[in-house]
Image (tube, rainbow, N blue to C red; front, side, top):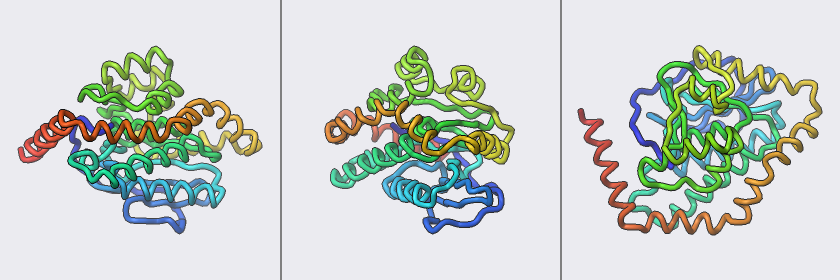
Length: 282
């Protein structure tokens, strides 16, 4: 559910020539290029940790993409080393429960909109993508990841946390059930080569620009496919996980809030935060 290691360093890389959409904001930069492809760039330094404010901007940006009927959308990061570090641990440590509920329901909304979108989606993964970062990328239809020492995966069990069922469902929609079970139970973080081998990503890119171009190549495949047929086919294939969360949405929220109220969980989070501070001070 959140980052298991701290990755430092950030900065913005240049993207292709674009024109801005109206939902351009401080945490998410949403643009559409001359080919009609929307590029959503996460830009919350240093590691794009998903807090309530970032999730709200992602959600509104997804609404903007749907409203503008873009050819497709590419999700990427302004950081040269981190796609997204996952959920912001500070949203879960000694939380205001009302905010925590809004945080979780907004995360659900983002997943519904991204996983079930009627427009084509791709992720240009230009850095580490643990936990929630992996969830965002898997929710897209296609993934190009920059090669190197980056890793990707759902690593919740390493901290004694059980990933929500819809996280699991998303991974099972992406790789085989056997591979997903093994990865989830062992908190496996895949190298780029390993991710390609199991189908967690679709291509390896040389850099961010190459990853975006590969994603554009994927989106271009739909130029001669009727959009309605494409979107309905995708949504039918993804129907079961979506309906499952819709049916159990409130129970999922209550499970998350109950998790936060557990003193042992809070103690574990505090220990983790202190470890991060000590590491950062070195």
